[in-house]
Image 1 (cartoon, rainbow, N blue to C red):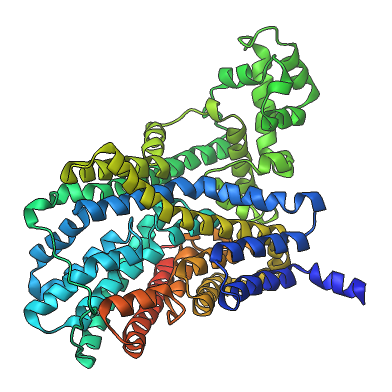
Image 2 (tube, helix red, strand yellow):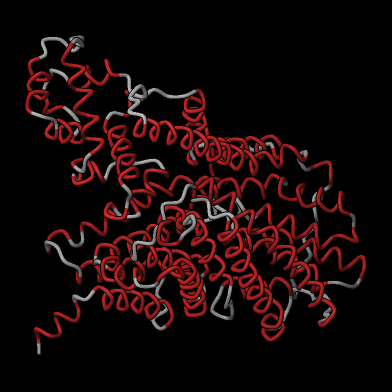
Length: 594
């Protein structure tokens, strides 16, 4: 009996269910903070998984730290940017400019656009706090369309909050599913725009069906807006928002085309035996002589795969400049490796960081690759072992510059510096006052970092328990519809998680971790994993009700009753979620990006 119970608890799918139930149960029933629930579930899953008992807690902390290292700076900088945009009046300037360009008759469109743009670097609740006074001001002028204005704000803010980094949910999904942040920004925006159009139409219908007046907050006085001349200019206001988007997106586009160009060179090297892509004297110099114990592990592994005579020549080289006849034999030996299976059979080499093209080949499974594709993957592995010896094209050199400037950490840091400069200039703050403002922002951002890092640890422990291997056979038998099923599954789990515990961010974090633990790849999906992230984001929009803080922010700040909020907010977000899913499926079919 006891052995049967132990065997059952060791089943990866049972562990998966236990982990998910733990998260939902602690949040809903025990009302525990999401961070504590995620970390507790991660530890529980790790304890039930295989491995040395002494390592089971340590690997949770390691996974937590890995996630924090990837997203911590970005979220902290985004929190500072949002605070500075609010306090400097830059966010107010963006909204007023939208209204000025579109006119009062198109005020709803201006509010959707404002929410859409501001929710990229600013959290949804902050955006709603900012824009609701404008909706109330517009109602005072016209005494109509109040429902239209408040639902328009919700539409714009909710969409980018769930689809476009650096808001925490999309950011952690990109990290968990191995998606370039620039790609997540581009596709999230592309999906969000038509979704916003549909949302605006729904808002107009709701406004006709529910002609509600604006109600006072109570005893709270209405805040007086700043005078127009107290606000920064539009281009200065937009710079902290647009700069990171431009830098990161430029890096994504440049890197994508540079990698395609490089992949073509690698394929030519395989098909035409053209090995000019390597700086062969540099390869010899890197591998010859010296203390092998100081070499990177991957290079030592490569040396062990070379024929004995080549290893002897390299070891006996008196000088690293000795590039005479032995170098020709080295070239021949490496070309032979590229044509065989030795490189892909080596776990160390196969686990090296690769570009997207080579990563897609690896993710398809070595046994499923054609002889040509396997040779291309081998060649890419050689390049990963000897990255400094690959001849780069002009576009490749440009991509190195954009990779520096488009790194999310640096891009957001530059944007935060500009936002702080605008705040100091417009409000005349001292450095001490600026420090207090940034400290307040970092305190709010710190909570988000803890939750997202806890979610990363939970997802990593699910992968550790072997869910991927348990499901692979089921997935392989699914045929051509596997990709569609996985996208719908991501949407479904995201929706259930949102309904169950309320937080869209926690829904995205948990669902992406579950999907990643199943080993979801572009080969399995038949499209880029960014569409899976978008489907999960769409699910996190659907099913918002009274356990969602966004529901109460919308209801209380708008002056609506619970029933009115259910009829507006809940229905609106459900339609937005379904629409975003539909656009995602359409783009995944028309533009799979693989």
